[in-house]
Length: 363
Image 1 (tube, helix red, strand yellow):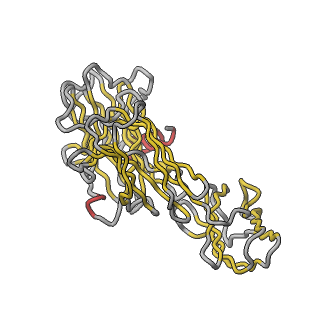
Image 2: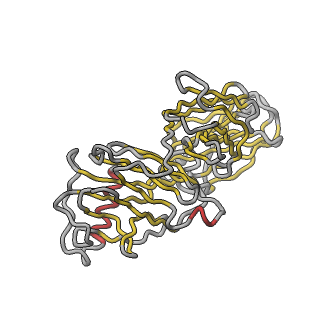
Image 3: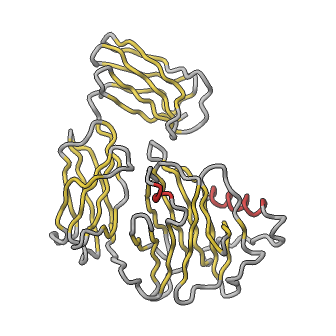
């Protein structure tokens, strides 16, 4: 959250010449507000904050654009803002919501990776009000908490429509919008069990769901339906499924509730499981490490050539080398050719027969 307000302050100072009145700090628990944070999901699954917005509501504020609203300055990377009168804003002050209200978002400079949208609301939960996030690309409507946090994962793919600038909007209403099917995933989980992956989830409000479709992916972007579980066939709305044939390496899963027409109502969060492929007795130390102090230990493996790569969260390589392992125990000092900036990295070890193991290391 500190990062978000830093971004907000940067935006305010950047536009000081345009807006003469700064926005006062009003982030107490009594504030009525909506914060949106856009995260890029690193290959390790860790979110990296890239942009965000703030909207505050009061009877003393105006819906007209004035000195209390801050225009957005374009970032060199991903951009996320609120669209008003053909301009993009990072901060808005508006009157309290009466009846229906919409927030139209604009995004651009997106990459073909996974993202997470975090919605943080305070005191928007007035009696009878609902809030949904509409995804124009997936044609889904996701209910959002009106006094808490909601996280929605999504992907930008090579399909141009997935990166449409107007893909998302929020609709606040005192009447449940037509077509909103409030299936709610209480939790979803995926864990490795020997050579299988066990999936479990709990869903509420499933009266309009026909089946749960289990979707798989090896890159976290391109998913395919592989199996299904009948909805409403348990007393406690808890479900299980076992994938007996996961791929070697990274496996991604999501659970989709589907109605009688075949339309996806709601999707769970994306779950990642890295299925080990036989390189169990391989480790690194120390961890956290420094650029000049990281060791790889290989033991009880098949003799032969191994390829070692060190990658950052965006897949950029900091080292790529081959080593010869002749059996027994080998300690190999990992020495990148350049200084490693602080962060979480992936050390990938691949044998000549295609087995692979990825270890997270903190520098």
